[in-house]
Image 1: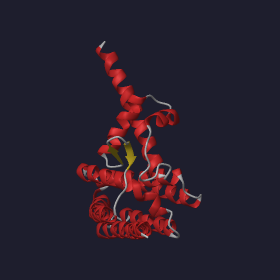
Image 2: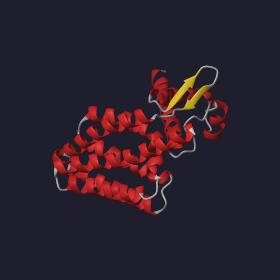
Image 3: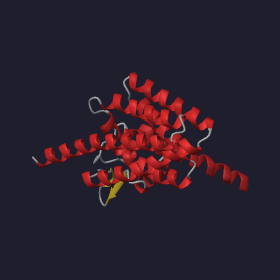
Length: 229
């Protein structure tokens, strides 16, 4: 009987994780936009699961900052201010620089191989027009970078930051010319890590985040100005 209960719990957890991933993808791709209200009944119908799974997933995304719940209104896709985004990218640049350096100096040959495969997939996704494949490929690249750093605490902190960046990632990558630059930047990161050059990998990671931040912050500034008109 105990085994049966554990089996159910595992299935439930797996389903919840799948629902969380679907909702994150919908937010990162722009299907669900900042400020948009999320209606439980509609989510149940579109994802094909019950309300319990939807509510559990929404609670997790709220904990990650992707969703904000308001009294009498319910869950809404979070918005991110210019100031919040600037702070987020500053911390992310520090952590990813460290991750890149640690990866280059201590990562395994298998980790490096996986990283280069992830870079190739990201480049292929970019060449084919992006979309959900692009988001998936970029996420895989960052997963490899964090894994290769060998530091579980850096991975935990960056995962939290990346979840928040989900609100801005497509905004950044869909700006004119940004995607091609992004591909070249992560190729530079992978090349430095493959060469076991820690300082160069750190610098390449920082440059990549600084450039992404510039595009995203410019977009947020213009949006804020337009809203104020």
